[in-house]
Figure (cartoon, rainbow, N blue to C red):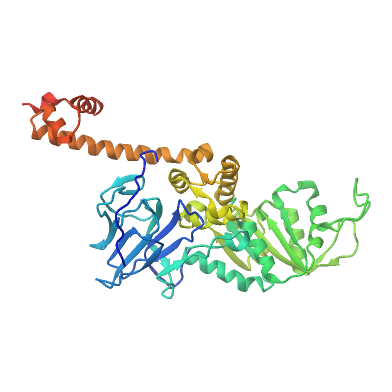
Length: 468
């Protein structure tokens, strides 16, 4: 592996359960801000003694060919990386990141550090490339040591990509479940992608009918059964014609019952009869109509707790929960932010996605923001950013919503606090050494005397106290 001459650019200051598997430390290459469509990577650190990061002509991740066999090399085509930028070393059962004398330094959780003992979830910035460290991640022995996500693509396939081993296995099992007729219950917060899962199940099921989505929480409470089961003309005031209802519209297809926890109790009983008997009786009809349904339900509510307190029928829950999958909130799968961002950009701007860039401060904000609205909120965020970018190709921090921009404030305050503490400690050390002589301190630091006086005032340090 050849060593490149140092031509490093400068960064401006403003610039679920794995079953019987194992657990161990992993490093995720989450996002290259200059190439947001580049596939993210998961790296298992088990058995490694050291990881060396540096700049290369192209991305190259693998074991070192020279030296210790359990040393990993991570080379990135990032011009803001030094040729040898940092080292991640396993010391006394902990992983320690150390700057290797780089020009632009290492940032951990928003703070520039020469050395840092990593903890679970730490966000690491090396150059303009972002990593996340996971200390105790569930995985299976057969999982690859280095796994690169598929290249970003739009649609359900892209949105079901993940670097998290346990979630990856859940998504893989969906392919087998899709071919069956078993009902599926998808659980998770609003905006996590439950309908994406439902549509993907339908697409892989080979069912010839339509995919019919029903938001149970949006149905008028006094018209639920008429909307779901249909009605005959004259069944009630305003029923001027026969209507088949939403359930019969999904005949031979997939019925997606979104927010099933919002379904009123009487309608729960009627739906249970449909699922048991496989037939629908329209309101006002005397005979039932056979229906062939594959049911997929979704909810953000705790259905099991609702069963316990009597607000959701236990027998209906049993019918719906043939196979269950839970989608974690985006804040709990931050490792996938790069995968999902690439997919969304490809879907929103297919013709120019490859040329798009994220300014480092914008990428940093995306990683630190908690995303209460989950993937849906991220999608809206990037959609509005692309509108504001116009014909440009670089998404800046100011193109993001105000709430996302504000996510940098906490990290900026932390960075300023850390840098301020270091500055104060250095001043105190030099004042002690030079017995309060401000001119000597200024010469040692290579600064003007007036600058030293400003710093002393900022940190409320009295030089007289060192002259005793």
